[in-house]
Length: 228
Ligand code: FES
Image (cartoon, rainbow, N blue to C red; front, side):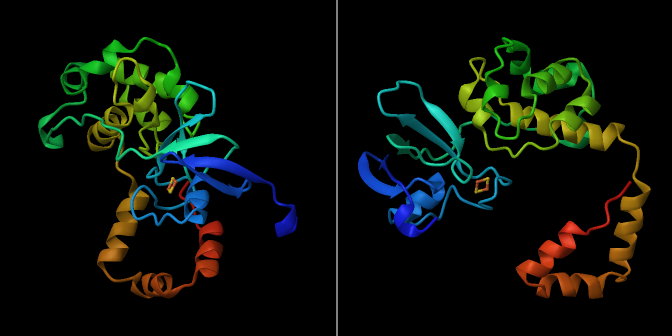
């Protein structure tokens, strides 16, 4: 498609109208409109969770949310920025808590208020079964909660929708920490790798990585050795 064939759409940023190509994501459209993003923008590839965004469509009262780097603009989109999604984070010393239901309930009592509405699942950009990992956390099954929440970006979109004010991503993080500190079997591959790094065996490999260009890094990543 040539530049002339690209359809233009009207979007509104902080109430001001801009005409932008419909092929752009929200982040790209904001930059196209002249905004310089120094916050709320990271990897631009749907991995870091920094760009969670709120918007409305013209004539529709519903507040929609999405990752700005993954959501395409649409005609009549009204965009606003909010500094972050507020979410409570329990304070704890990992060495002083136990992987038990009783302890977890003290850290994150709100997980027991889950209404089962599934709003968190519907909004998750990673398609994670958020409601199910909350159920695992409720019953202290930290292994299953850790596994199911592993791909969480911590973007906070689940929190923006939860009627029970659960902070899913922080609760899941505590679950993963409990699992890896107390329940997971030690990984021999990791220990071997850590020893090799400490002994300087990988210095040359690390230097090559630091000096590699983007194409080389992509090639290395795509052909990386994955532990069994
Ligand atoms: S900028 Fe990293 S997820 Fe969007």
